[in-house]
Image 1 (cartoon, each protein chain N blue to C red):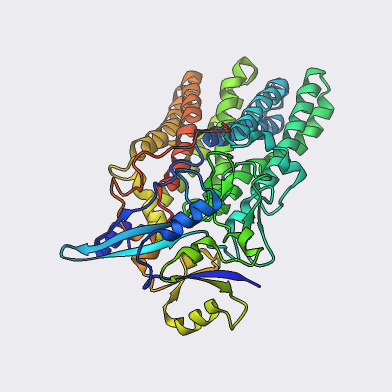
Image 2 (cartoon, rainbow over the protein chains, first blue to last red):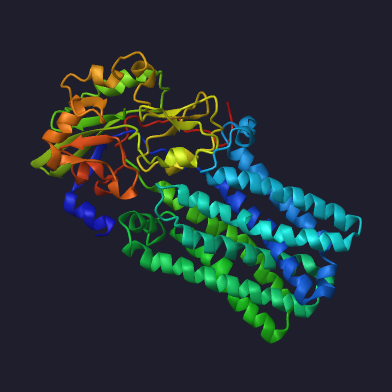
Length: 300
Length: 212
């Protein structure tokens, strides 16, 4: 039974209660997810480029490591800023509770940052052979680093919308989408047109798959659970996040897909860059909407 | 020993005595509540009735807040109470996001998570929780669920067909029961929340990040 049908049946109105707590995880957490997607995504793309377009990939070792380093630091900084007791962050390392995805994420992200720092140093000192060996382990570690947020969201038992299978796929796709978009923008003259086309294909396919998952949740999610139905209402009709949701879907997925097809037909790098910019900006909006809407539900 | 709560909603008259006793006993800051009584009006005039539902931490056997806490600030006591160590808490608010009952809040003074502890400090001194003592109609029944002779166990046995927990589908196994509850009183999605239902209109909202 849909939420509005339940309300019609009960004709019940809360006449006295405390105020709803409002947003608990604000935009700082959106920045966390967005920056982490870029930081891990560019590593995935460099690993791929070194195997498929080595001449282009070799020239991007330093730039990629530096970009990942910056974005993972942004991710960690905003995670810290979101804590109400940021100076107690060290408790995670000295009193770890291993059932929590936050604990695992903190350790893995710290190790990932360590590897990125090493990559920056190795690329700066031109030790390419060691760089490529470390890059393999960095790429492997980037997978759980980008996935841990899906586990964290799933541990939020109160927020039915965030299910591990869908969120895991969305986190990986966010990384491949933002990583390929960032590479298209970063590559400049160092990235061959063929390599840029490959990045465009990854961007387009990531957008397509992520869009399919969001639309599936939008249409079929409400059929699964009462709470999901009530949550999806916030992005339907006159819902408070309906406009932002669709702006995000168009900017991140639909327009980039169309622009990539257009750029291939017209062999235009400018159109490809426009698709990349839209995807990067739109991803922030998409993530923000999905973070906010379950927080609007009354829990008690 | 597994301590638990049972509220007989047939008896509760919405006096909010438990709510005030809790605030005083635990020095709960303004704008936050460990326990509150929700009023829901049902039906259309003149066929209306008002329900009262005291809401507090459910001290779940399978507590999502305990699982998500990265520093074990939320932890189980041997008697089943889900307790909180405010000195350990880093204020990540993971527990607030995880609790399906909205029972955890960020204390605006300490900037750490806080919630009902079944008055663990009073239990340790063999006293009843403050809300139990304050209730004028003994609607709050507290005791050992493992002891078949305890008041709460007997109450559950006597009302077997009418004992409910909130959101059983979440698999949290709450140690907090209701007698005489229904969809309207226990399911937050079964009632509308119009503007003006709040206890206080102007609530102090928490600042973003670690402001002390």
